[in-house]
Image (cartoon, rainbow, N blue to C red; front, side):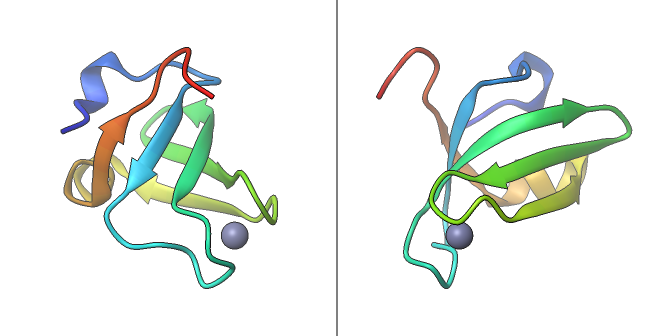
Length: 65
Ligand SMILES: [Zn+2]
């Protein structure tokens, strides 16, 4: 379970549901009122509210991969 309070830019996060491109690993590129995530495979960017992020994030992969 990822805790949004602990997330830092450049952390990798595994989401519960994979992106249509097949990857479920996203890289945090922005932290503010919203959390910015970039898909590690197709580079697509999304913004999630902190609440959505907490709901969708499965695991924080700091320093892994
Ligand atoms: Zn993708």
